[in-house]
Length: 213
Image (cartoon, rainbow, N blue to C red; front, side, top):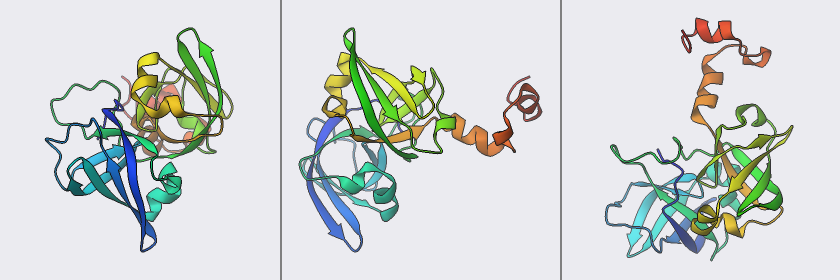
């Protein structure tokens, strides 16, 4: 489990095809590795991966075919910069929102424009995810916990403040950039728990299943 608060920007040192999937070596740069051990989870651009080797400040990960097909890691290149976050420890402050590191789909940047000192990004939503994204709800983009400011038919908008631009790879985005999207866990599980959600969730439905009193 993660929070969507990026701890460091890393750099891909090597991408090695192995038996149909990939091995990644990531230079962690400013990430504190004093408490990182083999088998720990690290989010790479919002994708939860397992540490399989530690060599000084370089961590190695195996990336499955499922992850390659569903995330932007399928197109990762050597020297690419990536957002890094260590797994949330019990008792730590939750600064963003609960993030699982399980990417739901790939979005793409369709516009960027200045909004005072912030930058407004419009992201295209892959078909099927639009029902999970709500205005003022939470969304995770490449591992970054963000608030949805506006939602259209097949897009949503977020505002990125200067600090977030500086501390994450969002400043490198261009029109057409693919981004990993993870929707809010509550929205995903609410749909799973409630039958016939395609007909609409009513107050009576929520009351029946114990979500409200």
